[in-house]
Image (cartoon, rainbow, N blue to C red; front, side, top):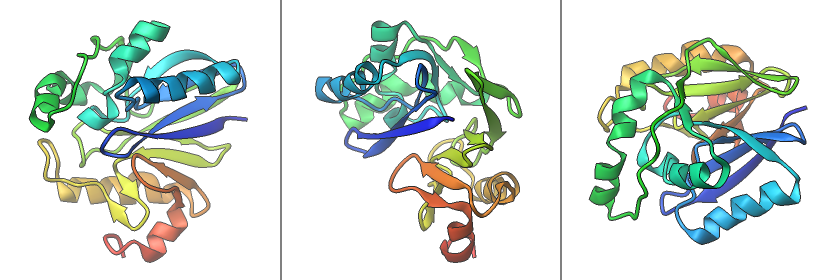
Length: 211
C-alpha cells in the first residue's frame, strides 16, 4: 500500500506530496519556502518514522522547487526530473528574483527520469508518464494499485495547466491529458499540483477545457 500525504506551501499554494509505504518516502515537488513550512514537512516525516529516499520533480517551475535546497541539506537528497525540464530548473534563481521570492539555489539533479520508466518504493511501483504542455519535461506519476496519479500542473479540478510560460503549448497539453491521463480509467484519483484532488472520470464529464 502506498500512502499519499499532501502539504500546501508557498504563496502559489503549491501542493507538495509525500508518498510512503510506512517506512521509506519519496518527496514530490517540495514547495516549502520558509522554516515554518519546512518544519511541517519535517515533523510529518519524524512522527511517522519515515526515511526520505528520493526527491522527484514532476516539473521544475519555481513554486515546485523552492524546497529542494533544504531537502538536500536536511536529508542529503538530490532532485530527479525529466531532462527536457533542465532549462526550466536552471532558471530557478532568475525566476525567483522576478517574483521577489527568497530562494536557495537547488543542487544539481542526481538523475534524469525517463518517460515510461518505473519508480519503485519498497514493493510499490509508480509508472512515469510523459505529459508535456505546461512544461517541456513534465511527468506524472501513476500508481495502478491506488489507483491514483500525481498530475503536477497538467490537470486540475475543473481546469488545466497554464501554457503561457516558456515551453508551454496548449495543443501539446491537451494531447497529454487525453492520451496519457484519460486512458488510466475514470476511477483514478488525481492529485494535482494545486487545489483539491479529483478523478479522471469527473474531469472527463465536467472539466470545461476538456469537454
